[in-house]
Length: 337
Image (cartoon, rainbow, N blue to C red; front, side, top):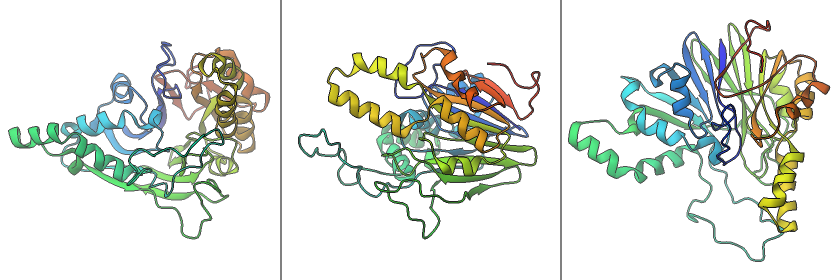
């Protein structure tokens, strides 16, 4: 069992840095079979560069519906059907949010939402819409040479939250809870837990347990007790990280209006985790190896991410695109980053 950091950059931005440029995507590999988490830009290309074809993929998992985590799911969905063979690949992700997010206090008027009939779809509805969007392409191939619709090659499910959980997409996005199993086969058991990426909800972290050990992927989250719960005693924790100082410096040019800039920074402070806090989470959860990825901004100096070591004295890796992370802790088994 090992993981491949297919892409390590966070945010809907083309960063243009050679080693941390591809959008966020992680492959968990068990006995040669691949389980993919999130699909930032270039995820399909990176899977090939890592030495795998889509025929190796057993299941796909989406932590939340932000575009930097889902944009390359479209190309995988449309292009992979010829490599799947006579089987269906499972896709699991968030369900419908249920209601629009809270309106920013800066708004001068209530905006008209995009697609007001169903403005906050989950993964099942999103991929149904994708099939309809590409119906010209899909029907050409069905009628011209009998290619199947990609919808017939995937088993798509919204993740269902446990009954009675006091979840509310605006008021309580990550109530304290225990992980719950969403997928199991002969190689892995995959558990999910809600994390705090307000206003995006539901947003999940995933834990992969096999006979070899365990790997957790945080998804996007602020500091969150649920992340500590699901990561307890895991071998490897992939955790997002943000450098608020560098983001703040860049925001001066990106958002000249100070009110807008403060609103953006308030979101980043609440909904993401600094390297220091990621180290604190790893320490409290007794994690074997902490891997920082989904680095925001991806062009920040690498040394800033090592702040995690002030709170965590285990093995720390600052992931770069296509790094392979073993469960073992020897220098030979895990490439230094």
